[in-house]
Image (cartoon, rainbow, N blue to C red; front, side, top):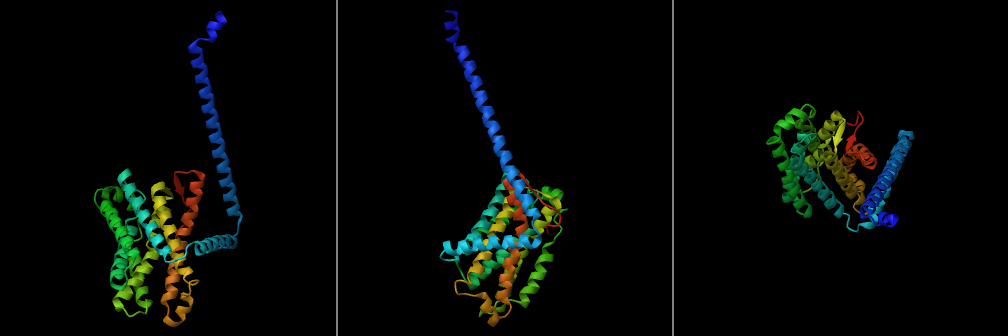
Length: 310
């Protein structure tokens, strides 16, 4: 009878259930730790494999991967002009990420004001040229991105000015004019040979060249800091994706019968410079995107960069 009373004791059952719950939780934690360790082991193995490759092998691997993605885009997307609109949309998403960071953290730590100024300049020029020379869906995206960039700039120069001057200004060493002036000179030398006014043609070329190198001050800030927090890293990675899509748009026009290599033989240096600018933009951000992907796979909350990235 005593045994029956003990077995029917609700307190004993509750203790037993609690022990079973704790055991289940411990098993889940152990399984989670095992999965994390397994994932990190794969990342470490991948890092060792990449480091074991010579520079020509790394370049060959990157070119093979890019060629595969280009082929996939060529087969999947019918109208390759869509890639340009996709690039503009991804860029807008990147600026939206910045805005969210400023609103959420009330800090602009790790951001370059010079890059934001250069972005606003080339977007303003492109918006003007779009109204004067052409008008398409990407004009709306350019307008939205410009408005978002202006808001980011006004916030960095307004309520977060002290935060920027204290933490970012010593690292933000590439000045806006140091990037802008060479781009203007290049645009005067090589610009499109169309029927539009020469001023508009030079402005359009300035926009293309400026977009290619506008991220340099941001990369310099990140290189100096060595560690990039997640929101800033997400923004720069989105720029890398946007640049790749834009570069793919120009390259795939060759297969659409609009060969820029052929056009370059009859219209001078401009078409070649457009293609070179797009490729330069992509490769400027390629190193950062590589470390971003490794950090994401490793489960890290920050991206650690080696010296010599810029």
